[in-house]
Length: 141
Picture 1 (cartoon, rainbow, N blue to C red):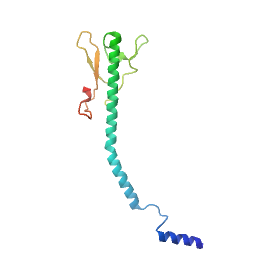
Picture 2 (picture 1 turned 60 degrees about the vertical axis):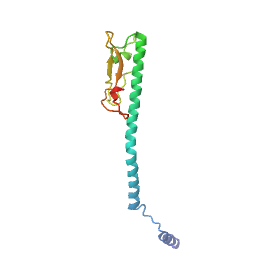
Picture 3 (picture 1 turned 90 degrees about the horizontal axis):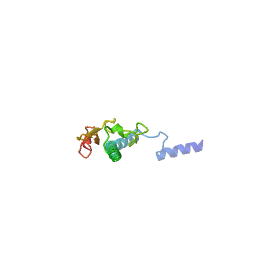
Picture 4 (picture 1 turned 90 degrees about the vertical axis):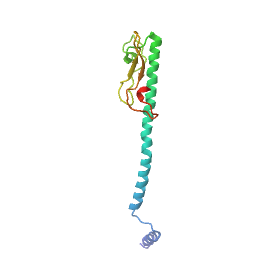
């Protein structure tokens, strides 16, 4: 008992208590967290946009490469983008599937056809009306 009283008196003199955090300490931590979140949020949004732009560039590159390969094999461009996907055992597959535009969420690419009698899709662009981080429109890429 005597030892217990001695420990309690030591705690009181040193300022230690069993109460935990004070309201002030919690409010300071919350304010610091709020400031850090406010600083990080715009960077997160920009990172998502940059990632979508990288995916769009890669998708356009892959589709255009498949169009060139199709032309090299068949001496003509495909009539539509779905011709690049293997639909039967006889035809060669150039893409596993038509990729979705990361900004529209659908495979709704703008196709550019040849003006000659031969026709065929020789280029694609994004169908998104949005403007990229570099100031150019996605549908001009």
